[in-house]
Length: 439
Image 1 (cartoon, rainbow, N blue to C red):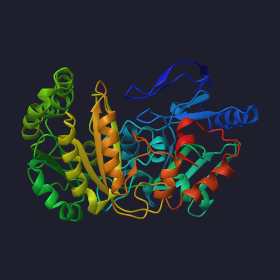
Image 2 (cartoon, rainbow, N blue to C red; image 1 turned 135 degrees about the vertical axis):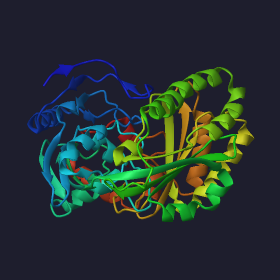
Image 3 (cartoon, helix red, strand yellow; image 1 turned 180 degrees about the vertical axis):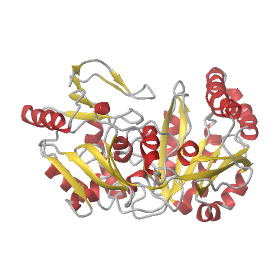
């Protein structure tokens, strides 16, 4: 275990801290000792994964734990389709670890850079009403609590902890291992098409109900959306003529157009905002008109190199069309120039205390701004709209809410806080973010 010092930044580069010390533990015992030492000294300690949260949830001026040394596959039960992974394992590493066993994660988001512990702690999700967020795939956790105790929890062991710890915000302990309920490896048939926004909104409920995975991107200042429909198939059972993208198509569509060209356009429109509506109209008609099939993880996740800030809210599913219309009206009324498309996804209801889909089918609206653009007028105005529709913000993405707001949004918040009092009585894991969002 090494201890270093220096400034840390998140992926977007706008959340920064200078920890008192940085520790890179290689074992659970080392983590336990670090936590116990921090508790005894009255100091704080915070684990960090890939830094893909846009909020200050991972910042600390105490000890920062980097969990890269706890990575990899720890155990597999092929018959039960269970896989136990070390907490620092990155999502993009998991497919190769599961491949020899013919297994895959049930669902993924469109970014796979996060650690498994960070992804579940903030409520990361993909899309599809038949599926929940990544935390719903968790069947067991190992936590190092605020006293240094190593605690195993599942639906049958320390069940009260398990009920709240799957989306734990880093407030309950350091997650050192995660057991996931996997599925047999599968393929996805992807169909991506630009379509009129009005038609997409009119048929949104039907598409969400009928498709395995449906999402769309709406380009502000246009009447078009880029729809993405993914259909699940067993290995080797894609429809005739459907196969992976060629190397050339991948290079052009996903690397040059989606990243390099888009980055250049963002830089240009950042200097000349009046160009944004025209650029968006062209982009909405030219991008994403393709059909292909591949292993699930290669379709779910895409490479992102353009740096941005993001806000995402979970709304009751049926409120998504009206909220988008209000967002469009607000952008026009304020004269905002928005270059990034708005992403819309869905997820099934779950029973996890602080999950954004707790006890309701949820639709997600994510808005973005290039890292060089001023986002806050747009974000604050959008948040007013989302909140008027009973929206819950993603824990790892920009929002301006405080604990009093969350008490109205989460019926099990008090239960969560009672567990926190037991697991971290000295608030070893506290930071400014947790002080703001938890009572």
